[in-house]
Amino acid sequence: EGRLVDQVFLKLSDYLQVGTRISAGAPNEPSPHYVFHRPLHTLLSQCFQVGFVLDGVEEPAFPLGVESKRLLSWTNMTQFPPVFAARLRPTR
Image (cartoon, rainbow, N blue to C red; front, side, top):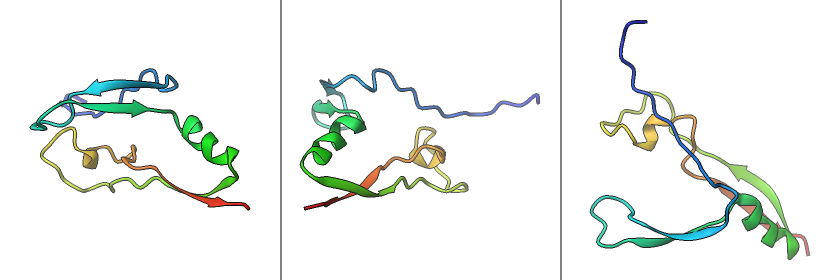
């Protein structure tokens, strides 16, 4: 169309790989910190094994039209929810 357009992407790699690493974190954080990655099925299967059921899930995202001056702000990623919230209840 003859015009420059900013596009924002999320790039995932090794999602299914369980692991621990040290992350630099956000700008101006005083020191690196540990990140303990687990895929959702690994986290949730522990709950299911002891009798919990998943009966609610929310993935809230920012709506279109919310402005941010930062290109990498979550407000610019309206198709990628920054939060996954799940409700687990005991069956016993």
